[in-house]
Amino acid sequence: MIGTAALRRMSCGAIMLALGCCGYSTRSLLPSHLKNVSIDIFENRTIKIGLGEDMTRELVRQFTSDGTMRVTGEGKAQLKITGEVSYFNKEPYVYGGDQTVYRYKVTVASKVRCFDVAKNAIYWEGEVRDWALLDQNQEETVGINEAMTKVAKETVRRLLTNW
Image (cartoon, rainbow, N blue to C red; front, side, top):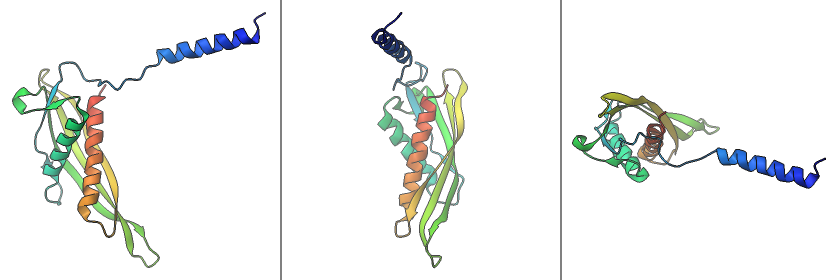
């Protein structure tokens, strides 16, 4: 018969073995040939002026901050990103008792296409959408910038973890 101390050791050993098989890595899942990325200026399909350029700047900032891929010109890039800001909306979100709007919800969406130059094929494409809340006394750009940052971060995450 096996004693309780032996059972505990066997249970702990089984748990440690199981956990050792489960791995977590912060390493990118990108193919090894994808090292540099070029980002074309995004088109703006909304009525809000300047969103295409703003989204392009934010994507460059997020790729630079992440550091997994280097942002370069088109001639040196193995991955080319094109896209458009496809949606913008600012709508009332929180009302007071007198129907005064206290907060707004700002939503931004981008359609993105990532082209693997070496394989002459689309690596990833999709639409990324996110939002931010804006107090009534804040400039609209605060909400737009926050929503764009979220969209750009999610775009980089999706691209780097594309399976």
